[in-house]
Image 1 (cartoon, rainbow, N blue to C red):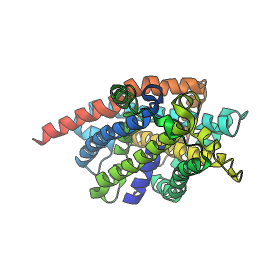
Image 2: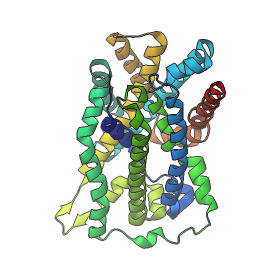
Image 3: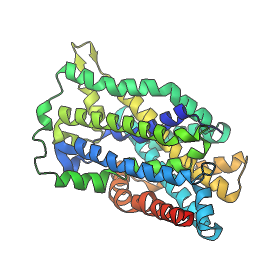
Length: 360
């Protein structure tokens, strides 16, 4: 399994954008300055990326589970690798449920969520059991131009439609810089920027190791640009209050596009963005958890085990999340302030320190 630098760029970009364009990060506390909070958080995210790539440079031919083993020894690393696998699976489950519910709410109302999630997981089974991440990344290369085109064309169409109201972005820093900084540090750094920690599992498979850091930073920069642009568009179109109360702001934004009663009803654009971003984010998290489990338990080509894990993953998602409100509460109120910091910041930083101490 190999990934070239272009495929790495595509995977990180699609992963970081994911479904973040569908709602405005930090809108509840930073209000109309949420886009600035995202920009600040991306700078801290860049520091985390520097940390992760330094850890990877310790041994370019090992993934995160193997690096933990070589740094901590097998007795400490094995439980930690297993916990990381569960962590990635859990985030994938959050992604899957939100992805499925968003589609149900927008274009398939009345469709049982269980039926939709089953179809999505069948597609996931086909990818992880019968294909591999290399082929998956090639699919990403094909979809990326359409994905970015849709994301960049929406603000242009909104402006032409006359629905973009720049006054909704004012006053700038109405309550000072502190709420923006707090939002960036406490709510946005971990999601989505800190989630790039998952690529410690994938960088091993990149063919040109010397390009890992530059390619990853370029992808992070492009993803930040897209997320900031979509946030500005949502706030300017719906207002900070409107963007904070609707379930899927970006979908509402797309519905505002109307150019001469000719170009309108572009719901398909929102659904395309939702499907591509949501599925790739979910699949990348799931495959990372699977790679760690395969490494830990020496699972090679046992497709039935992979299929069984996918079925357990589907059943867990069925029964664990009662509704979208609960899923977002778990994701934003529990995972972001508490759980993510452990796996994205504390553990990687400790590993980095141990590596540096050992190298002295």
